[in-house]
Length: 306
Ligand code: FAD
Image 1 (cartoon, helix red, strand yellow):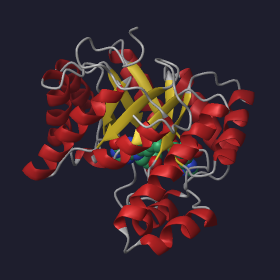
Image 2 (cartoon, protein in one colour):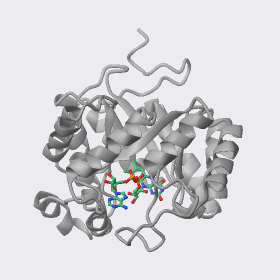
Image 3 (cartoon, rainbow, N blue to C red):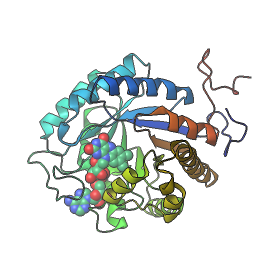
Image 4 (cartoon, rainbow, N blue to C red):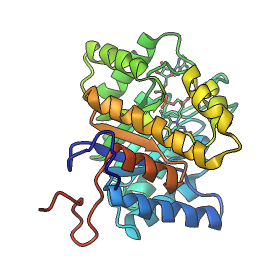
């Protein structure tokens, strides 16, 4: 690990989780499991696997989750689950299948409408009508840990931040114990949102979602769809580095590590990293922040066992 870390974390001081998506082919599958094994050195509290809206990735998500639990010894693996476009019976069946595979933690989501982000949404007849209803369904079916989404810059379908926070409150009232946020790049936006969430009486951990930028153009496009603002300073720092991969990697590492270190200085202790199933940038970010490595022999992070 480098001596020049931005926020040298003590063991257990800051906690990480990593998000993966289910691979589409054998090569992507190899990449995902190599990534998961290599990032395990940071001793994440949990890893999670996304689930396509409408069940489009059901079997790939289930296989991925099973392999992470059984082959990679990651029993805390969380399964994302969406309820859009499916009946309650279908969703309940999926819950059973994941539970049978050993899943004890779900990330409960509504999912985007079939027309994509921003298209109009109607609940599926006889389905869970939104994420709050899905949380209630999960809580009825077992003793699961239930995480949900949160949107520091407002969900694109929401009329106001307050409407969003009302929805978060409904999810918490129904049993959610943690919220993972949409990615954002301005920590002031997150801090303002957190103040409003706490003022609304919501006390569960609100874990910032951090997206290290592999590809600036792609992230800008996706952020536009999700309603996440890309500050001008990021364009200034990254846009001219399209043809300079090494410099771009270094700058992207600094941007994400600075964001995490700044949040840590503001008192945030948990971070959910969108990995895009690739290890190098995520590893570099975690090392630059100063997250300790797990020692291979005893499973303890290095520097902690003395
Ligand atoms: P909800 O929490 O039910 O709603 C989100 C917000 O939209 C609410 O705050 C509410 O105010 C508003 N809203 C909802 N419905 C309406 C309505 N009818 N009219 C007006 N406002 C409304 N998607 C996937 O497909 N698979 C995944 O694995 C996945 N993982 C995610 C993980 C995280 C951490 C996050 C932040 C998002 C993820 N998403 C995923 C994206 C998510 O499915 C979309 O953002 C979806 O549009 C909303 O789902 P939700 O659970 O956030 O919805």
